[in-house]
Image (cartoon, rainbow, N blue to C red; front, side, top):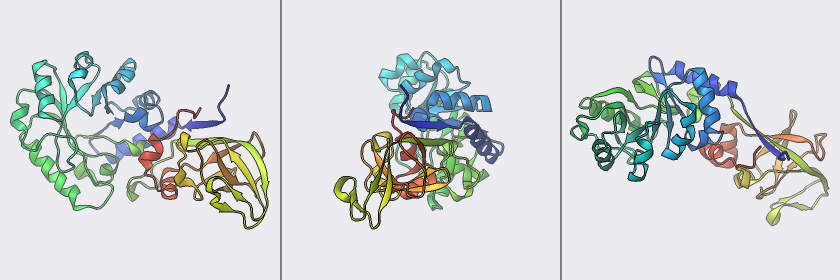
Length: 336
């Protein structure tokens, strides 16, 4: 049986976004983060599409994610969370490279004669990464890519330049084939941040983390939901939980089969929109777990019709108060 809501993924837009980011990366190679199930859109689908477009470097968070992509035989796959003791058996099969980020991980990999690896250096985010003076710890390791991660690339923050300078200083003492610092927002900071390899994520999937990318990144995900019921709500009546919306005048309402269990969060209550063709249909009242009410007074729609739910990421983030990352990765598994 077909579901009453659907996620439509545009492979052409995904590939075009990668090509845009690759061009902005200048002489650096452009990789792709496909962690969190391809930012909610399907890791295998995203990786296949991007590999066909020319991407050669892929990044996931965990070894379970790497194992799921192993059948694709990607040119290069790295696991950003390093390697725990429990991961070693899988890691030693060679399906991916670990991004080592702690002294214990380095020791574990060295003791196992694990071969090529990547390394994360902490330059100011205080999340994952070895200290900047970790050169001696890495002696003898075959470091493919030395990387760090920008904490505030989506802002014009002095920390960006500080982190870049720290990264350059750390890299001077470490032998690595490539250097990598920039994520999607970092690419938009310019060529000084590109080094040898960029690692976009959000912008691949239609997110716009900095104004410089506006108009250059295409939406990749589109959501449609089916009308379960059309109803007339008289003036003075309320809609939804806690009666947060009261009709000032009579209103025609469509009840859509989508809610916060599907990743259409309560932050869209009273702020979101659906579309019947070109007609905007504002969300009325509170988004519930499985249902949302929209105003279709100006639209000719009825039970069984499909409406497009506004999911343009910058606009949807502004409407909901959620980040673009949360909106993508929060998409539920009921979307067909």
